[in-house]
Image 1 (cartoon, one colour):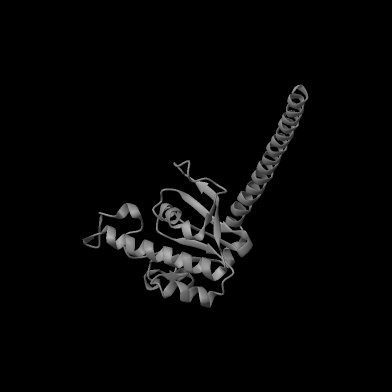
Image 2: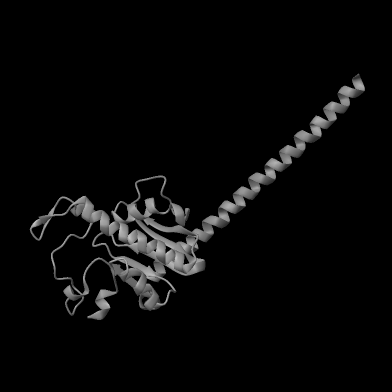
Length: 212
């Protein structure tokens, strides 16, 4: 009986130390992974910020808007007094009140276009690469969002609740919305003719200021 108890104790001791060593290895792995991931996100953040000042990025990027091209002047300034953001719902423009239904129609067009662009580019996910003015702990830089689940984040950005730069570096995609005026800034590798077809078939406009 004593030998049996010693044998069981020996097995239990070995099991305990095996689990302990495994736990230490797991903690070390998690810590190393976290450090590497933070370094990666810092690099991505710097890349995004540098792109804003990059001439190459400016030449390869596009604007998608709700504003008709014929109402821009030669300097690229829009001449009509019309609503420009979610905060304008309930306000009067050109003698009428902006309704939630009117706003939602435009917002849904932007979301439809975004999904079409991501599908065209072969994106299965996007990363929240850069964030400003977020009041939610559930919206963090580095979050990887499946395309099927991005509508919530798109609507937050469209409504000016948070500024988000969405990226998928492997597919050459980066986009965001200005905090007012509903300008979608897009960098992608999709040919311009195909991109224009995607945008205009859904009732919005691609690069209207470049036509002036």
